[in-house]
Length: 152
Image 1: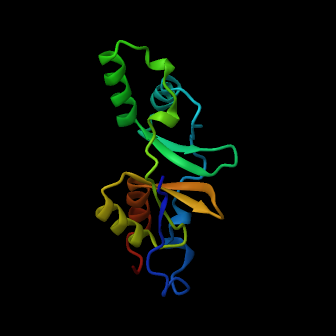
Image 2: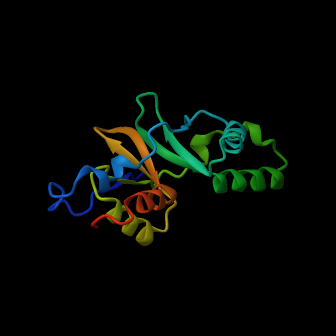
């Protein structure tokens, strides 16, 4: 398992105002899953909440992985191949454990660069070992529109 944290350049962090930092634009109320949840529960929640993936946390709200619609589709495909119901499968067996996180204190522009470099759709934000939010590519776009016309 490899949780990797991207902290970005920190030398100018004091000079940047809070209005351009990740924590100002990240989603704080997250849909999360537990490793023991079933893939069927995940699929139902992804559909209901119109999201493409979510963090997986333990009982201490520590990030242990990510589960996506792609992970669920893979499980559906495999269960059909082996003629097994999808409800028997647990998140812990199908989640990605090689998860990159991002520092909530970096600028939204450093986050944008990180999205370009990594080709990821979302990054969890961890503080003191706990999941506190998530920033998505859409959040960066919303921030750019909100900041339009301001000195970048």
